[in-house]
Length: 91
Picture 1 (cartoon, rainbow, N blue to C red):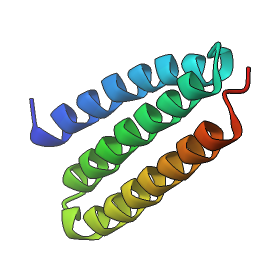
Picture 2 (tube, helix red, strand yellow):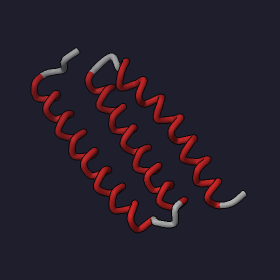
Picture 3 (cartoon, rainbow, N blue to C red):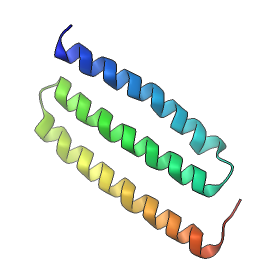
């Protein structure tokens, strides 16, 4: 088994786990559950980006993209959580 095949298998497994987060985003009973789902989705997507970079031997390029994506996701999750905390917990 080559390293590229191993990276592709790991990325496929993470993509299956992303489906669980998509369900949480769509069917979360509260807004905070949906925010947690988006945060988990972004975390798994960041790891998939790094695995794709490793599979194509371009980790240096994909690390920049993954860090930018993770930072935007983190700031967005904090902003949404703070907004909904201050405005009251919507259903």
